Length: 103
Image 1 (cartoon, one colour):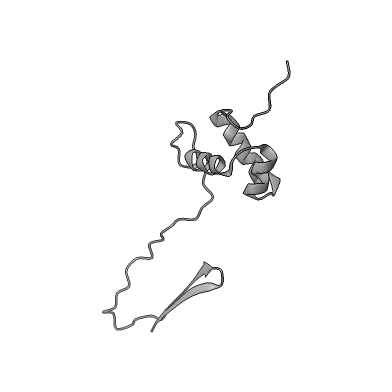
Image 2: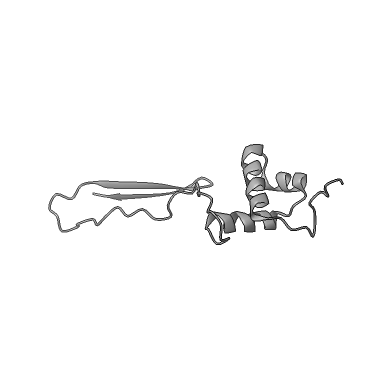
């Protein structure tokens, strides 16, 4: 018996979604093009990517490739007589940057 192609209204297992997400990573396609090719909605793909990456699906969590949202650099002691020069430049994307200088 021929296997029915997954499409609108069909349900996929966690394993199938993990496989699809791995195919997306390997495909080199954008999400929209990949979703059209695989006949899935982008909303479903984003939802499952979130569920699988944070471990809420009850299975193994997919390791996130994101950098930490916060990096603790410790305290800056402003009372010190030997305050070093501190320069911080953040690239915020789209040509926008934040440049802070102390000292």
